[in-house]
Image (cartoon, rainbow, N blue to C red):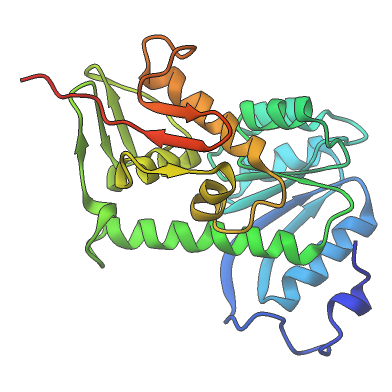
Length: 262
């Protein structure tokens, strides 16, 4: 992890990335005050000033119940709560993206975190600029999606994908499978939209992470695999023998559109 003086060698008032003041509201939850301080300084350097921070799960739930956030950075190992269990409680009150911050780097922990509603998983010690890069990629994608939904720009954001078996309306954040509305996280919808825009093309997990998550993979291929698995469960009759998102072993993934019945 970089020290503050190394991270911001350019000076007190010079942001590392050329951005204007940002309006996004961010909640930081970590019982290590040094981590909170590092993140707060980093965020403010990058012109994120709407920041709330706390050190316990109890405080985090209070903030979530009483305020609206655009992103939550959540430690997994809090003194009074398990971050995974806390995520489940947070999801009862908000759909805000959640980035887990943790020293637990095993595949099992990543599978657990992403499986219960997390959007990204960053292991400690981390470079604070990596956190910023992932945040900005997330906010940039959200802005593009919102612009498309309001007709500000034309393109894939306004298109309906109707394959008979399922219908995807990215602008409305709607997935309909066999005539039934199916709940999806924002990231699942974004990933499925990506596949629908690029049918019958093969992508490696690293390429998918970079194109959908908006930053280099940093070895997070498991993140892609988990989200694809969750989509398969919603689209395929037998997720263990998927027909739509095919895994070409050792190569990558390909979306094969279903044949629409006449």
